[in-house]
Length: 231
Image (cartoon, rainbow, N blue to C red; front, top):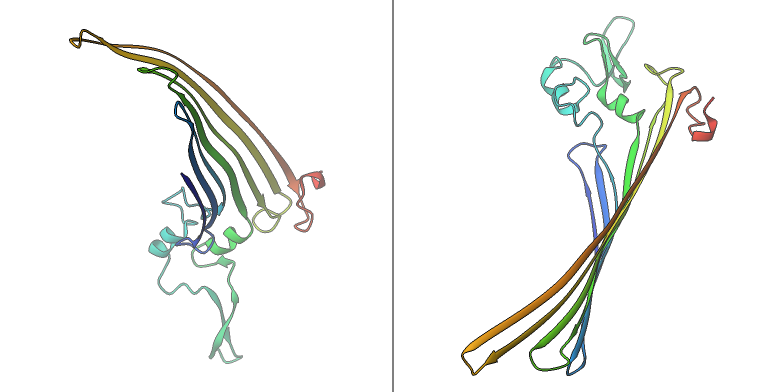
């Protein structure tokens, strides 16, 4: 039996600065090599890249866009209001980065100057070998793996209100877990009245999780935001 599939998924979030893209590959193979041996493998690979909304975890912050829509004045304009010398309305200009009446920065502006992205490569798989050398005896060896690499990149550009305090952050995590399971089962009966099932097994799990993160601070040039450009 053979099964292979490819998948692609992309979606924009509710907020303009949130999105996700995912590519997946799945395969499933099962074959009977002889009358007494069967093997199989199931493998899942995926790559995911996504962004989450700025201040999305601070529900009551004025810089959370959804919350800001509730508490800002209804006459607060998103763009500069243009007027002639007589004070007559002429239209709208550029986006306002700071709301003077509210005394706060535009949440969209703060989101733009604090870009971030995350990506993850993940693998899940398992294999098995099943042997029936004699009637009633079943020997099975199974192996499973779960592993991923996860990376986060974020920046704070040195613009108001972060002049001279730009920041670049990189973090990386690598995780893997291997599981080995071996069993032997023997079923037989005596005089067709006594049914005996003998089972022995062993399982071991090897897991490792490594993480590293680095932060560069006091960056002053928004065009030089690499970690190596930190003072």
